[in-house]
Amino acid sequence: MGNSSSMLTQYDIEEVQEHSNHSFSQQEIVSLYQRFCQMDRSGRGFISADEFMSVPEFAVNPLSQRLLRMLDGLNFKEFVAFLSAFSPRTSLQHKIEFIFKVYDSDCNGKVTFEDILSILRDLTGSFMTEQQREKVLAHVLEEAGYTKGSLLELNDFIKFSPTIIVEGMTRRSIIYSESNITHEELPLELYRVPPVLCKMELFHY
Image (cartoon, rainbow, N blue to C red; front, side, top):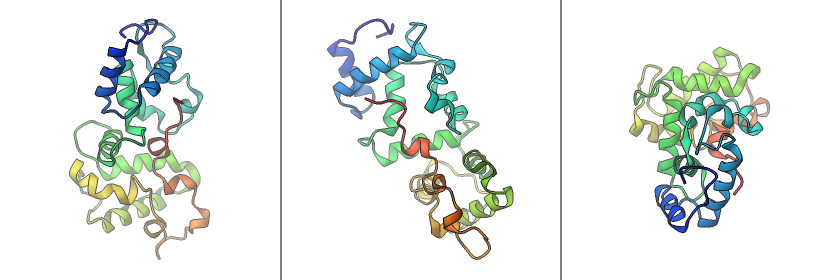
């Protein structure tokens, strides 16, 4: 399993399945291995950032650069463990822990207002102004009992996440009296922030 040209043994499959908390069936792991080998063009047994960027669906995603810091140099076992966060068999707790790592851009165990705002910039682009983004985010934080100055650790993030991370920014959170934005004008991405983390379809198995 160290070299992508080798075949998976039954032991390898069971080991990978255990490492990914049984998020995939054995047949799915075999399919993922085939995809891994296609991406590992160098045949070195791991996937580089450049090889990940060769997947068109990944390259055009607004969060691809953020995910690359978690992806570069993964071997197959790590590759499957990474993808397990997107499996329907994975617990909500695991998904939130994974998303927390994406938002924690400097890997210090805390997520700030600016960290979340930066993701929102990537997802909305020119559709919203910076002032609108800040208003929306400040309002959602306030509803969850936090302020712009709060440092969200994982436990805080778990309480905060159903409002903005897992379900996406709800219409109730976005549309309020101070905003001129209506739900008809909002892009779908705002209702499922961030889409690449909620539904990843880059790797079919």
